[in-house]
Image (cartoon, rainbow over all chains, first blue to last red; front, side):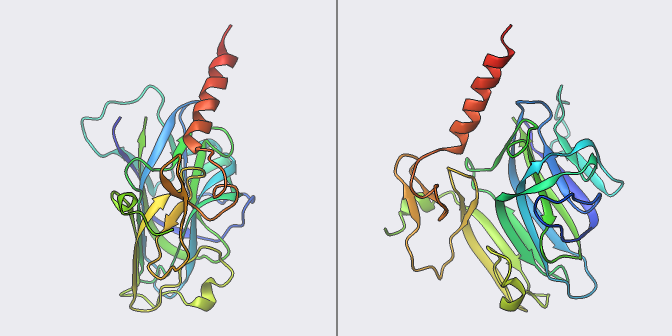
Length: 165
Length: 108
């Protein structure tokens, strides 16, 4: 399949604890488009936009409660990297807004990206063939999210490059 | 166990760039397991791998002196977390098993 990029121009990464409802436009979520669709995550990037020092501890993790009624806010965008990419019958769900809020699992953190969005940059490129997989849309395996934990409040712009299989 | 050179090819990449930032201090990250304190003006760059059993990232910290855990069946480094470092339960195999169970459930 073809790579896609899910980006959010600017958002405030407010800290939210594990197993606690996230807040709209304060996370990035990625969920399989069907019960068995697989997505692989290639890259995560965060660019700081804060105008003052604000250490922000970002976690890429699996969700123990998955979001429902998902949508993208005005600041968010999901598009294919190749303009010739054909539309999938079941599109993966990238979202930063949900009616049923996602909750990060307390035991399935994948990566900690603590940085200072006042001028800081974080980039994570997974090794080819070892990318984390999102399978389906069930709890613990079917959704990952990028959000702040314990310390947050920084303004960031970010993207996730992923690939539906 | 020493690092196996063949496992270090094709690794991923992780950077925290605080060259133009006040950065994050040790005190800041004290309560955040896994966080890497990168101070003002500093850059942290590291190779990364993914644990084949849980898919957490493994950051190859250049200052680490303990050997990384290794799974001979997966031929890959594993994370330091139990049970990933003591038994071979590949994450992909677990997903394949979910696929198999789903296909059984969907049969008429």
